[in-house]
Length: 402
Image (cartoon, rainbow, N blue to C red; front, side):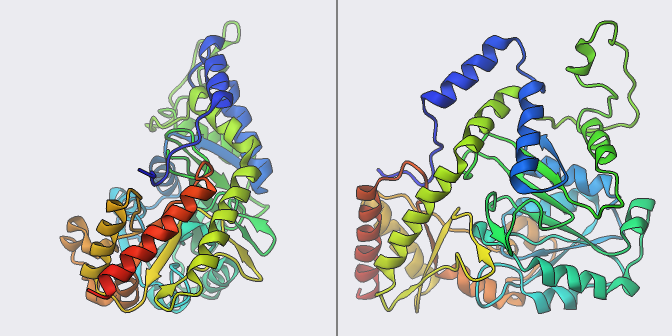
């Protein structure tokens, strides 16, 4: 069976993790601090805090920014539930918008129509690793400054709706010559096991506010709030006589450990190699399916954007959702694992119960019904890639002619 997205765990990773375990320092320590520094350098952002997951990183950020009841956060309807869950947890209102015709990212005109005086954050999601239109979204936020109603000093200092990138898929993606992580006021990465760069579980919050914000202070504040509000972390307390600490606010517990960071440091060191292999697999799929009349190929590069090649979102033209599901079963029967990204949020019980209706989002619903995600990962061989292509073609032919 060809798996869908296994992590790249080899001897180099094992050696680094083993060295960490034997170092006597397995929680947040020198490797985590180095990982944060390396991410900042790679992405070109101003500072980075490593956390235990995208979800906690983004939720803690929203709370730190002062998001709560009476506020609204705009997100795309086509995303994983975490994008919405973190907003719900703060007590703010989730405002979903449909996606565009050309890719799986949120439609610009829908974003602008959704802005109200209660809008505090726009959360673009780089679905599959293909960057959103960040300059246009920022221009939109600036244009709507008269509507903006800040509720604390940080928001007042920014003076507009904040752009918080859900960059869970897009580590290494490029938009107008800049890497993901430096494209918005704040960007949050996921390093979950299936992501391009993994730490088993984990994430990072990359800050890139305007220059009049003190990013050293932001780093210090955020490290504190992600460790129960404690004024010193364990590494700081190892200095002689430095045992005493304070708790300056009731914070959270979502720091990254050095064990996780050890995996991430190896992954980051060879990340360009990873991206190169993913790009080759994308190109192979594109060449194989470009001659098929039923295949709608995903956007992954243009004059302004280069994907991180995280997910290959193939769509089958002219089929029903039932046909799509039957094709997926046929592919699995040929020992190839595939997936679907994503079920639009109003299809999920939790968001149906909050009053969302999929009929309000026709583009997302249409694309979901015909989408199949193909395997893309470093260790997928050329022979396996050909087997995936053959399995998809066989399955589509069988179901479409049934």
